[in-house]
Image (cartoon, rainbow, N blue to C red):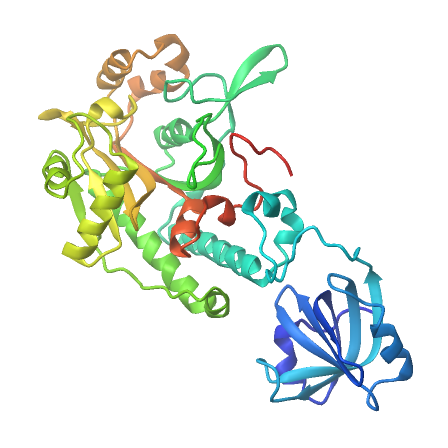
Length: 437
């Protein structure tokens, strides 16, 4: 039997015959009346098998079905006050398309709880739960909405390489790859290639894709592989133009999720508040004073730690009534060589992070477009100038001011939906301990 309708299309089919297909989410055998809960990509529907209304064949057949069997059901849709959807299907024919073994490794209904590691070992079965489907439908809508916004602002969608011939940011947090007869690396961030595109005349660009960092951090918000949406634009006056683009993208995406994912948000018991723009902005060195005042001091020229981010998040929420804010003018000592410094105060860089609910979601800012400054900063950071020639040489031949940002998609969804671990918003996580499935 070929499906004619998904479960979310059945309300308009009352009194008519349909064919639905999916998994048995739950089954209750009560003798004279039995119930199957069928789950598909769009939701759940109750199949009611009642003595006197169903054939003897179906009454016997249902006794041999069990959870996670894949079935197709032909039957009549009718109204009922006994289900949340106010409809049910009275079956005329049931076909089992695939039989599941009766001892399931985890329970997709989440009646029996499983540890996250066990769930990830059986990720395909774990993803069958309505809650997980809701998470990734929201994530999908968030991504398409961010794409829509940047496209509407005349940004061009591009793809940059994942394999690079040299380290892009310095340090050892890269994965090496055997590439024929030599060693290459997985990108830490496609930042430098985006800059090369701007240097090539592509004035407004964005992309979505993976990046890798060989950090030995096994935390609830770190992975070795993550996905970002990143944008770059030319002819900016300063980093504040980058902030305006990013916050516009975020607000547009949240509005779309709130409108289009109401059912999924209800499944997860979550609501979305649309933030006001412009987002508040805090700058170094004033941030040192704020952190000292709220009891989370950090040393001069140090980067912020997680405690500082969370403390600033609480501070901004109380003072500005916002869960989103920007941190600007980071110490240049902790930022990559390609970040523009403040000319009259080079101790600080035109570098911005966007923080949401006390967690950094993105980094960005204004890039250094002046060749002599770029080379000077690379030398200061101890970079190998020969390895960087593929990137730096073009800056000798006329490159405009530019800036951009890179926002972590899985981390955004984690904080938006109050998930406990970023792996819950990642289909197949990769971290220091997990490389399969």
